[in-house]
Image 1 (cartoon, one colour):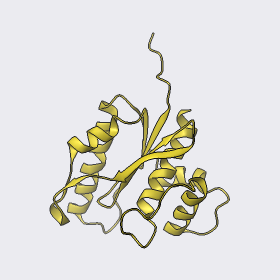
Image 2 (tube, rainbow, N blue to C red; image 1 turned 180 degrees about the vertical axis):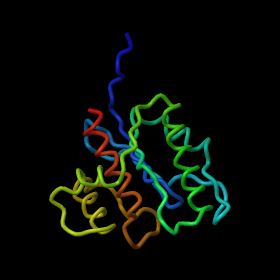
Image 3 (cartoon, one colour; image 1 turned 180 degrees about the horizontal axis):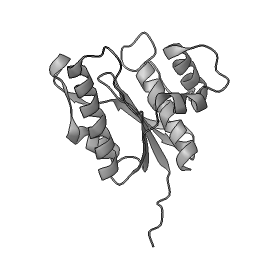
Amino acid sequence: MKTEKTISLVGGVDPGKAGWWAILDVATMEIVSNGPLPYIGSGRGATLDHKAVEAVMKKADAWVIERQQAFPKQGLSSTFTTGEGYGALVALAEVSGARVSTPRPRFWTKEAFKGVAGSGKARNVLAAARMFPNLNLKPGRRTKPCDGLADAALLALYGKRIFC
């Protein structure tokens, strides 16, 4: 009989070219590692760095990757690129041996934003700042908070709730 692995580190991924990942230590409730999704190249020709993503995925016991979808009037090339990157993230997380969840934004945000006023990305940043006061939401030389990092941290928190 297969036994479930104890989950001590849960990762969250906000996919996309400006996407981020974050890993939550469920015992301390601290984000212990994070970074931008690694890409090879820049601009329209950039592709997800599968080797670097694979190394990241091995760091956590479970991953929550925000489900991606096509939107009306979104270009075919853009839709294909989004789907290709999302599929690679899910596959690499599963191959790493981690448990994986891919919730739609409306499901995980409903949980993450209970009691947080506002809307849009500002609300995401406010919620992450409240939950993770030690997390630097302005990494590097940023002057504005990184909403991708905020989303990744909140996705990891959502993962703690569903996996632990």
